[in-house]
Amino acid sequence: MTEILVHGAAEGAIATAPRVVEHPAWPALRDAVEEIRPWQSKDGSIDFEAEGAPSPATVERVVERVIGAVEELSPLLPHDAAYHRALVTDLRRWAADGFRVPDFLDALLAFQPARNRVDGLQHLVVFPMYTQNGNPDRNFEAVVLKMVWPEWLADLEATRYDNPLFCGITFEDFTAGYDTNSAVLFPETIAVREAPERFSWGGIFCDREAARFRRVTEASVELLGLELPEDIREMIGDQTRCEQAFVLWDMVHDRTHSHGDLPFDPFMIKQRQPFWMYGLEELRCDLTAFKEAVKLEAEGNTHGRDVQYAVLFDRMFRFPVTGDRVRNYDGLGGQLLFAYLHKHDVVRWTDNTLKIDWERAPQVTNQLCAEIEKLYRDGIDRPKLVHWFAAYDLVSEYLAPHPGSTWAKGPDALDLTQPPRKLVDDVLPDEFPLSMFYEALAKKLKHVIASAKGITAASAEQAAA
Image (tube, rainbow, N blue to C red; front, side, top):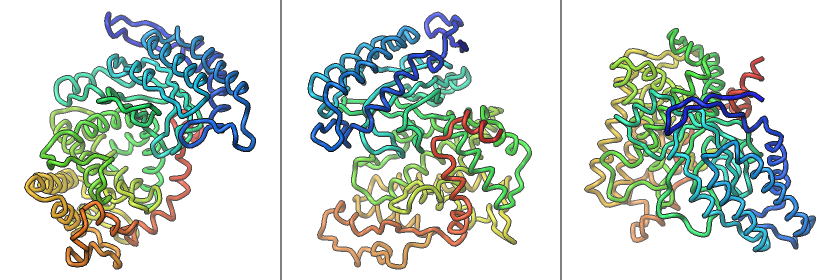
């Protein structure tokens, strides 16, 4: 069986560990979970009155197969022993309760990957959950992953970008809910009886992000005739180098959500706000990572320049043309970045060829970051609705609103007797449509975007071969 090297967190010793996915119990576990998933309703329960539903005894037998496989694999992962014991208990309780809405809070609380961030350390994770940008239902998923925590990243986190909950991870194998566009493992997606007071970890699959980035960027560069500096061309051709860029980008992005001059009512996903507010928040976090990458490059950090162009290319090429146009806040952020750079003559689309002023790109990108930061700083002194309009003004300075937009007509066009959250209903699903440039690019890239569904580093290499 192939072995991987991991560093012991406590002793610093190097130990060998067999790959979980090469143990015969892993495919048995994966197959059992896949058998359960189609029986589950949207909330994770099993409706035995539904047409074609199995008997409770049948489900119990399959759950016992899951339990047996977990117990067989758990000795390979002693750092997850407490979680696996809690997982088995929660599975048996689900069965004893008649397979109603699952509650895996105890298992969730026992799973603490951020406490032991060791490069190459494996985890076996099984939960009823939805997968963000993947499966919206709380079906069971099983995934084997590895931690990405190289020494240089650990040093940056310890000395500069404190983020004790962040976990950079890569896929080893997974069930159907991850054969999608999902690139995260977040605790808030898991079915529990009540949300914990605070979550203690969050994982982002940098291998999927890197592989997807490489595929879409390579296609975009070819379509647009963009001439790349040699070092950036080499980076795009190197999966490991791109993974390192993304894990650094993600670590800085993630912590930025709670850093900076935030308005009193910080941007949280559960709050009802116009989608451009979420778009600006996500872009602010990405541009903060970009700004820090510029500093790191100036200090001689070899990952700094890679992060800059990962942010620029992913934001400009992939984000605007991925997903539908219904409140697509990530797409909006990408459109805004491109339009801003275009207006400031950093990018030019001339003679059907895209040109980038590589020398001015860092300065002007940081300039957009500063404009968003000023919006936030000023927002602390504004009422919510005034702040929303100020943000709309910033976006619409660079992106043309839909001609039928009520918000574009200004406050006099809205019923201001309603509470702000009700005015969100007056926002169009596609408040800022794609430009003609992006409409054409979307048509040419749609098959490339679709091909990146479920991509991993291994599948990308197989496709290339």
